Length: 494
Image (cartoon, rainbow, N blue to C red; front, top):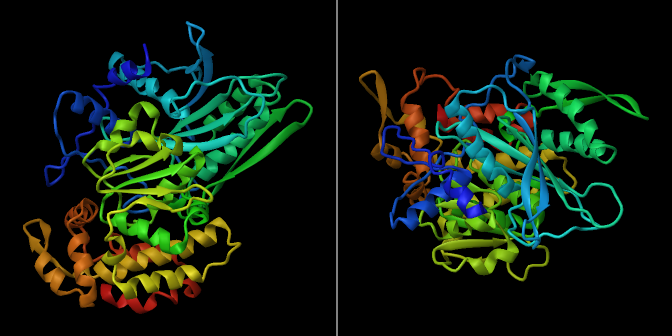
């Protein structure tokens, strides 16, 4: 069975239909693309979208030191390149799964098997004729899988070349987890790779200890004890960032690939929910940049197709008419034939132009003064800032866009029975700066704003701050020094 046939076997679990207050279909990650391909084959035109959830609507509490009952990961999969039966090239195959599948009912087992059939495509998405290598620089990247019930699982992948002499085939170690924390799993992969270079058998005791350890709450640490022959017993400390909604994000790569002005242009296109393709030869660059771009929307959430690394077999998703954020390896650019109404961003070093195609209006959507304010905050960051420092500066800068433009939303709800109803007309009249009105008028038509408001309408404690932008400010900027740049805007919530 080839890759395309395997994808078609996923038809029962590849679509997530989520309806809430409006008739809104959402598709996620790879499953959205599978649905696009299947429906195009049947000549069905369907405007479908999906909630990817890169940031939580309300950050979880960190009072407990651990998240009781939540595991670090569900599976460790080993994907290896195996020679084809005809002897012509190699294909990726899952050769090991740890732990072994637990006892499941038949339907659960079938669904699990369907999901696992697609994992190898994301570990080796290039679709090229692989050959044994003598040198290869290890690479770490991530992707997202979504079940039919809307639950999400994150895939973290480390590709490496095992120690040995002569040409060897690559191996990919893939962790499937409910936890979204790229930095945490990158450190875990460092330990996995260190053990793999000694003996593959040394990996599994470490992963077993990890799986039996409690997942620490944001801002807390768990220590794993592991024995390595010739090195003795090691204690590995794994710490989750305090701001849980940013623990899957590293803005360093985004701002290494693009200037502040270019990031702002990309942000504008994402806020308008457009079709955007990012190009790079490195899978790690694609996954880090796409997750960072999605995080710029906080506290709003990207509601549409999101695939950080598009496998070659799914490249036709670029022709989908619905909004998306896609990461595509640059050698597949020629396969994107329909480039109308598309923003293509080249993340490659030394690229002649970062924007291969644009719609042309990206620079005129955000008000000039608002753009100047964002750029001013970004310019204040240190060039050698650590991840946490950079995250705070970047979050502050782009949160300002929403505070200044739509931060007064909480004043425009009307009691309606047991719930509340958003008053769009009075909200638009309440826009403080008339130069913002054109942007706000467009933004409130997006699904990210619509869903945010729908969630607000169902809140039982509208007078509290937990579900307003002010809550997110308090989460992000816990000291007066970082608040001084935005304190003048807080009055819009009162």
